[in-house]
Amino acid sequence: MLEFLRKYPEFIVLPTKTIEELSIQGKKGPSPRDWTHLGECLQQFRKEGDDIVVNNRNYLTEIASAYIGFSYAMKFAEFCEVERKHEIDVKQVLNSMNEGLAKRLREEFKSNPKLSVPTAHSLLDLVKKTDLSEKQEKNLLTFLECCPNEAIAAFIKGWQKEGKTQFLKWRCTPKRYKIYNAAMLNRERKADGKSAYENWVATFTKINNLTEADLDRDDITIAA
Image (tube, rainbow, N blue to C red; front, side):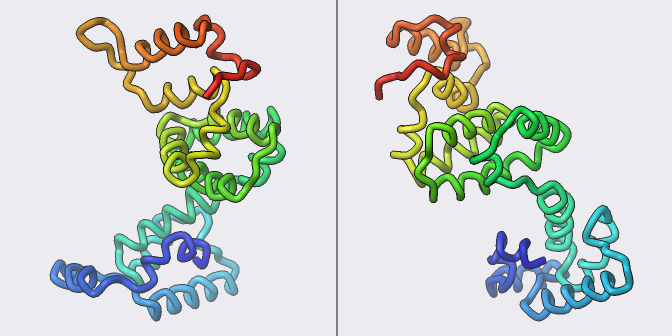
C-alpha cells in the first residue's frame, strides 16, 4: 500500500472540494485514517495466511471499498495487479539490457499494454538522474523498441519536457529519430496520398542523404 501512496500522494488527503463532490454523489473518498485502517485490515489477512493483494483484484476492490470508497479501491486494486505484480526493474533495463530481458518486455507489453506506460515513467525518472553512457543509450533504444507507441510517446514527451538537452544528445542516429517520429507522427494518409510520417521519412532521408534502409541503423551519427 505504501508503494501506491508514494506514487499517488494526492490520494492521501483529498481536497475539500473533492470530498464535498463525492458526498453529494453519495460516494466515499479516503482520508489518512482510512488508509491506516485499510493497511491494518490487509495486514490481518496476511497474518491469517491470505494475501489478498496478489491475484485477487475483485475481492481486494470489494474489501478496500469499505475503507476508501469504490473508485479509489478500483485504482488501488489495479495498481496491485498491474504495476506491483508485474513490476519491472528499470535499473536492470537501463544497465543490463539483453535479448532475454527484451523478449520478456515484448511479451509483457503485448499481453498487458497498460504496464508499458508506468514502466516508461519509472524508467524516465531514473534516466533523468543518470549521465548516460553509450551502453545505457543503446539499452534505452532497445527498451523503446519493445514498447507500444503509447508508451514511447509518453516517455519521449516527458523527456523533452523535463530533460530536453539529454534527449537531444541521445537522439543522434537514424534509428533513434525513426522510433521517435514513428510514435509521434500520424500514419493516416492525407488527400495527397502520404501520411505525416511518410512525409517526414522523405524529407529526413533527403536532407541527410540516407536511404530508407538507413533508418534502421544506429551506427550513423546525425548532426544536430
